[in-house]
Amino acid sequence: MNDRTKSALLGALDAARRHVLDIIDGLDDEALRRPVLPSGWSCLDMIKHLTYDEEIFWFRAVVAGEQEAIDLLETPQAQASWKVADAVPAADVLADYRLEIERSNAIVAATALDSPPAWWPGDLFGDWRLHDLQEILLHLIVEVACHAGHLDSTRELIDGRQYLVLTD
Image 1 (cartoon, one colour):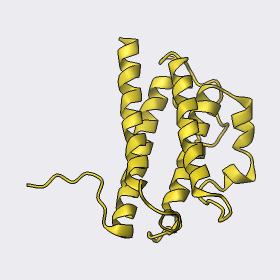
Image 2 (cartoon, helix red, strand yellow):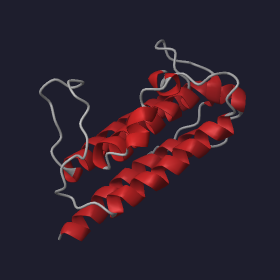
Image 3 (cartoon, rainbow, N blue to C red):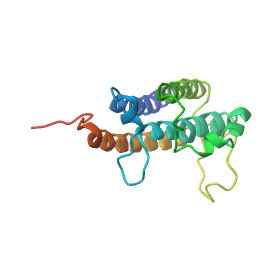
């Protein structure tokens, strides 16, 4: 049951990740960098956020307790997780996201669903806490799916493309 549950949770997370990458597929560098919502983030900024604040933070830092990842989260690049510098190639941002997905999946494969976090970020969340890998996976499914929806809206505003629309 544990393996089936983990497989189902990871499958749902991977589907949301694919949605993220599929909805921005085909956008050129200019479109990837163009903010269209009042909050001012671009599609590329969202990918950077997903890389640092979701994949690296939750899997490498919280689940695995990797000191390298914990230290990385304190760098200026990670602290500015919602902004991609103009000099950073879009292909690098996308490659980083794909790499972190692979790393995250390897961590999930090596971790039992009932394993508690190896590291927790002090008082960042107040009293709120996730207690094991299963809760973390459920949290990430919601987070990534929510951001995929943000990217759906953004893509539609950029060029009218819709990810999946079923009509009568």
